[in-house]
Image (tube, rainbow, N blue to C red; front, side):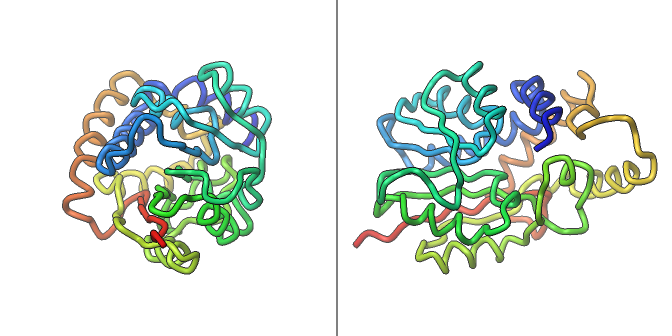
Length: 245
């Protein structure tokens, strides 16, 4: 991502509706698996530490974060002291079968070789361990945030499922989320392409009133998406596990 994008994310992620709702969703999925506080967890693509915040608040104390950006790691260390390292997701600096849980949330879309990353995740997972993958979806939603974040692609849910299955993992759950705001975001991104506002990130387009309203909408969204499994959404979540031999 651009340096300004990291700075904006670091400033807003604690309270911004999207980051708050996303952490809530991931925390629920982790709690659903009844993972103990001593579990070894890897957060791949830490960015400025939003998942590390969520894992810390959930009581996990054996967490390692990895990002390819030195700037991202500096932001993480400034807010979430702990084990964060610089590295390449397609060549993880971790041994075989070490992790009980891997988080790869909004990261594989940045990679030239997303399949290599999935294979590496499968390698470092313990038998019975799980990976939670979240990605941006639907190419027609391509917009400013994809550009500033240096995304390579947006996905359909089945594409992520196939990559995980091809790596020998078992897909357990998958669904789109952020479905209630799908059409407003589609229209807003079309307007942004036309208006070209003087902002460095979509995360800057917010206000306290807007944030409160969107936070309530997104809270309802992430609570209902796993239940109703909508056929579309701005993002998708896929949870897979490594078979027990």
